[in-house]
Length: 314
Image (cartoon, rainbow, N blue to C red; front, side, top):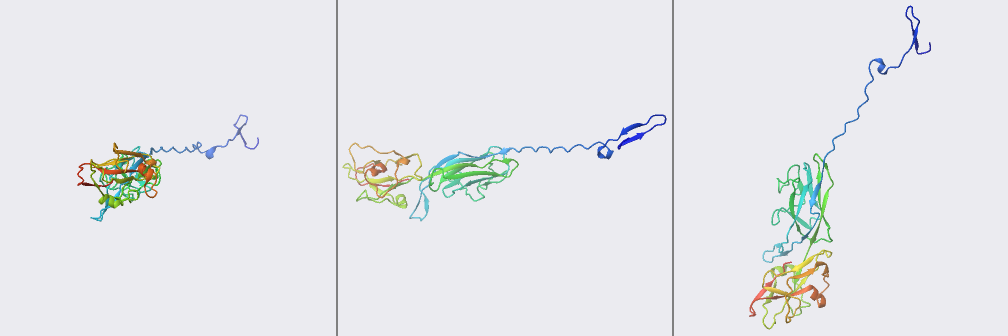
């Protein structure tokens, strides 16, 4: 027999040959099972932040200093625009709302008055499962509406970026959502009285609001002077939209020319495309004056003994 063979013999029988085989585990039991692959981890649901609408336009609130009180206060109150912050699924982490130009826009809890929401790392943060200090019961999962007000003019269209980001929580957080804002400033100037209307300077912003310009009621001979109003180029100049000039009451009217003309019609309401208004270059005169300026005159009694004070609202 060769190596690895063994001879076994029984009495009265011819010997038989056997070959020994290798046995795993030293021959002590069955071979162990191979290791099982790791169980796949459950996939986390993804939650995404959203800001609606994705783009909006606000108008700058104008301010002037009251000489009597010394306080600088708003004299225009343009409509605030609403935005909604929310997630597309329930969220149990932290949501943070931010703005890259908080000097250009402000945020409030209401359409009018309300509490200002500052971008200070506290008021603009929604902690897990509760709201910010100004509304502890608010839920970013259900949606929160805040209101945007213009504080300064944009340098270009859509140059203000709002962002809503998510962190923490039990789900996978989606990418930040963003929205853009254009803050538009409009200005209406009223000029001082003659002798020379073409060179008469405009009243300062403080004076045009708190002092104003006196106008005599027009008489039958049409001898009363008209005041010059100038609609200035909007900021940003690339903004496309219409500006509409209206009288707040029936005490004043506006016309296209400085001197009265037979059969002339009121210029109000006066509508002009914002991107058609050129930049101010020196004094307003000639054809440019007719395109950019209207003349304000009073209405009412023709006795000549009555005067109205005119204040632009922009």
